[in-house]
Picture (cartoon, rainbow, N blue to C red):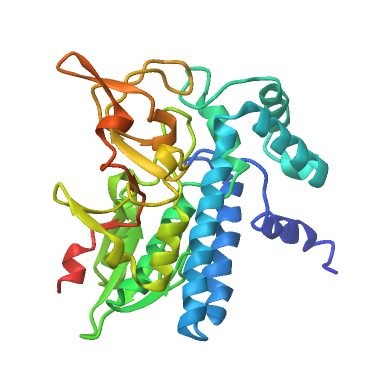
Length: 349
């Protein structure tokens, strides 16, 4: 038990383990529960599960699988942004399990929750305000950032171009000056060179400060093609399929990739699970005529990523002639694979 004098300090530190709500980046009080939940998930992989992964090649393969299936689950959590019924049920379940004074620690969130439970608002609508976005974000475990970081972690291990030191759980490093924010990973190469790796391109200031203070070159990477993509037709994120996960984990991914139009992809046309475009994991990248999940017109002049199953019966105009997507692109559908943008120079050293 703590003393009466220490109780307020104890409570303040406890809030770093679970705090309700999300505040703006310039606020003095940064609750940011989604960051805490994301840290807990990443701790499983970077803090404990590596004991399992290091036992044998078979254990490492299962470790890869766990990462991909966990990433899929986190991407599925985001479905509450486009499914009001699921969101309502999710909020009610949280209210059953967590005391409201903890769940709705941020002032105004409980009232907002009641409004959202009665609303059918979806992301990409004008009614979807930044306040609603922050609230929904706070209920989920960093559903965009954590999946990217875990996929990059898996790729760093698979590529074997250095010793990987994950710093995902270390938000600040203490030193001879004020605490400094580290990058997400350190890469130690055989020639004794060290590089800091930040996932995402929006932390240049943070990366620059770390490089200046430590003399360690730091650069940003991200997943290619803005993965993970939200299908405009249904609003849900595109996931990784079992075929990809199995081949990735077994080290046979390169053997199943095919080059087409200058790109190596995992194409779906000969996969028995493709099922005439009904596979929920298959991708289409291109134009589509029609409406998005909000009933608004799709941008038919821009190439976007879609679930094949969502658009296989749709058309697009080619020289003013409607072209059926399934009939004309049977050889173009593909499964999402992890690709990191920004590490080419490091790999080729």
